[in-house]
Image (cartoon, rainbow, N blue to C red; front, side, top):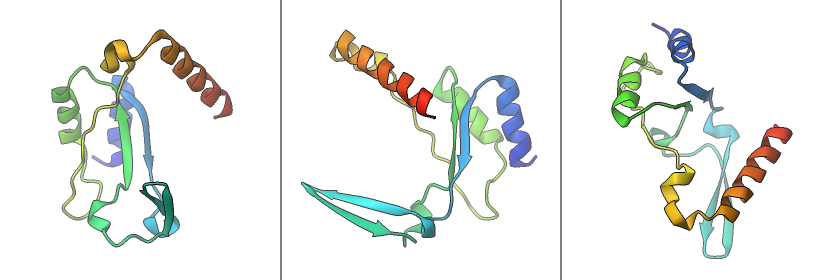
Length: 117
């Protein structure tokens, strides 16, 4: 199974929210933060084993379900590869600290971003 077919399965299952490949680090940049200082580092980046080459954003019920989807993924490279699974923060993860005012602000920002995108 190729990546295109895998993506199609994610879409048919209704779990794919986004998925993109990224250009090589030679066309990228990093911004290093050190206190108030900002330093721009142009690519390519030496630690190629640590670079993100692309991503899938899926919405599933549990980490176990996410792991099962990733286990079904074809190897995205012709060499030994790892796919990291991370959870996206949601409003409820912040409990009472995420006040109604902050919720409204986030909703406004999301709506504005959707209009701009």
